[in-house]
Image 1 (cartoon, rainbow, N blue to C red):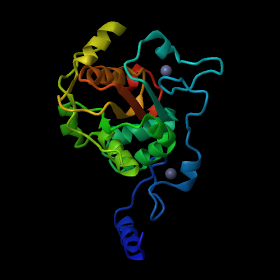
Image 2 (image 1 turned 90 degrees about the vertical axis):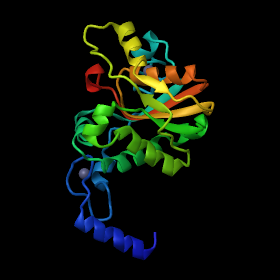
Image 3 (image 1 turned 180 degrees about the horizontal axis):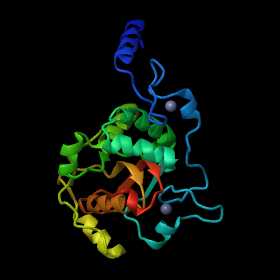
Image 4 (image 1 turned 45 degrees about the vertical axis):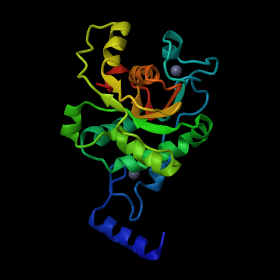
Length: 242
Ligand SMILES: [Zn+2]
Ligand SMILES: [Zn+2]
């Protein structure tokens, strides 16, 4: 970065200080997170589920969810365990207007998943879409902000006009797993056009994986051969998504 641009950035930081996404204090000048906070992040380590990347016990190859359900996606991974700290990060990022967190989280996710991205070779990146109503209330789709960052760091093109949210899913309460699956699948649609054989989905959090599964299912019905995903966090149960 040229000294002039760096000086400009510093001035902007002083005028509009960025907050660290992990402690929510003002980040050091010229930085978007505190070095101390970055060192303490709860990265997902091996052993991970071979399918969805969730942390598993030493003896397990797949997590409980992946053993019980036939997945429509090929494989995916998440950078962090969804602990109390990350829960607050995601809450502010998603519901409280902290759109600025998207670039830090997207960068960390890219760095974590870099090797997998090379192996998967997706032809494009698709953010998991949100309801129109939520989009209007929030002003942005958090998954798209993450996807944008990963796209600019990896060079993989971002497509926001392919995977669409078409329907407010009716209440999930009282539905069994199969019912929920069917209900979720109706929530997504793919704009028919020439799609690459392999795509990468991006979202903020993986809970049971049913949302990503529903997206993968409609993408495959539209001719995509392999669907991969990355999310910032993993874990948290079904309640975290709604
Ligand atoms: Zn911090
Ligand atoms: Zn799994």
